[in-house]
Image 1 (cartoon, helix red, strand yellow):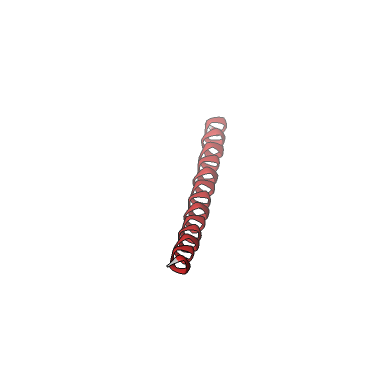
Image 2 (cartoon, helix red, strand yellow):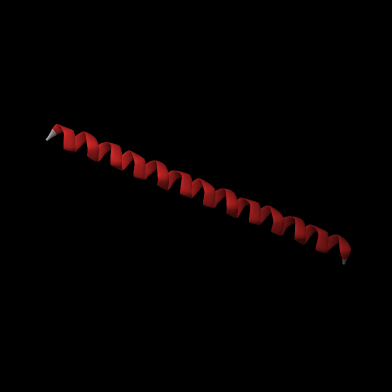
Length: 48
């Protein structure tokens, strides 16, 4: 019984770690896209 419980906890932790890294990766990607859009907007503003 305790073995199953420990196994479940480790599985949950693994899942949580994967989810966290996915969220961080997505946030980083969106942040990069936002920065690129901002640069494009600024360049467009200066060009026109």
